[in-house]
Length: 150
Length: 150
DNA sequence: GGTGAAACGTAGGCCGT
DNA sequence: ACGGCCTACGTTTCACC
Image (cartoon, each protein chain N blue to C red):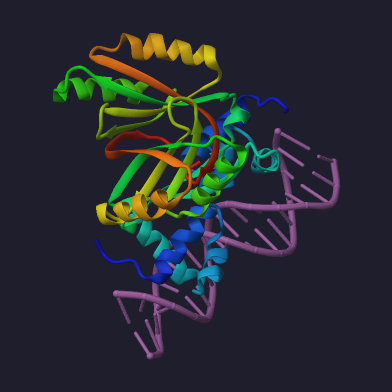
């Protein structure tokens, strides 16, 4: 994996903040001509240093009123049991993130739903019906004083 | 807050996936003329339904080799103690997310650093030196089978 | 919401270092 | 290998219908 120089880092910093800036604006900010800048951006995309661009959507505006982190433990630790759980998480739209972690439980999820009723449904009908799920602990998000990945 | 119609939702769905699609391409996908589409996007931005655009950066490419979720408990629950902790998290570049949660501890953090050595430094020199921090539990991310917010 | 036109940005060939 | 210049082409943006 080729090294990134200072200009590449600055390009990433700017695009991480404003992913829709025009190439000419970006070129100006990093001190390159538009064509040189574009070639760097394209190379960063080709190398998957930049893997995509996303609009940041305000969750409240689309009816998300309940967010929780959920620690999930499995009672069986085979590859198959983990794969089945991960497939179920991939298929659940309420699950925005599923991380396999070290510690007393295997997974931490980020779940986003409209309200507590929808969360109860997810908790009992989705998580509760999966095989080998042995522990579910919910941590309801009251506020996010910092969320750089939003 | 004005309602979003089906076209607005489709615009959001497309932009959440490809934040750098051209307005003409977006207009085509949602079945509007470019000008009508642009007016809707601008209105969504003005209303902060769309709060920004970001490039998705591959953490490994920028030297992030250690990611952890960290549960933090405070021994004092005053407004001032919480505000001080939240300010320290806002100032720490390793902390990408800080959520105030219900449950046995007050906060859950997402921390991204280069390696275990850098994490140890963060753990002892940053978290360890803050007042009123009474419990720190680290959950190291081994894999993220799903991460829609990446 | 659509049309049209001017201003602006993109993308790639070409040349210099 | 990398940056700058040029230019044809595509896109954005806005007054107007």
